[in-house]
Length: 216
Image (cartoon, rainbow, N blue to C red; front, top):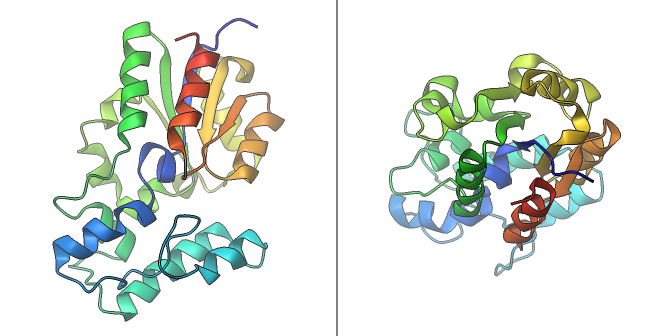
């Protein structure tokens, strides 16, 4: 099969690190007691993440997980600092390195190789706000950005994937899509994209698999 011609990234956990990975830095920078932000999903921690297990069992949605994750931290004393919710406060905290370096490295390789770049996310603008997103240095690297929180149609519905492909001016089979949610990866596969699951315990493996698909 010929190399793919575009890279399409999810944001949370893929372009951005997960909230689990930045939680310790956020607590330190805000002077909060360790464990104020409860839960680390599948990552090693001092206590099991029971809420994550409920999500994995299909009892709650991914969005429910993250909203409860944030609400619990606020109840434990994590400050909002004027932000509408904790996810924004955490990722926009000065000193927190939110963007995943492995993702940025692959984006730079794609730019050099002339490979098209896009974002397909369910809630970037909802969680972070368009003004902040557009002010980030990486934003201009992605001429295509499809956000379900603005579109009103969420992954894994096929329409956001097909809208992204149309915006990239490519058929789905020429697009590599990376997501951390198995259901959303299945959604990409269902429309013909070369979809790759990113495991937060080994994110580099997903980017290496994308390099292979892109011929890098």
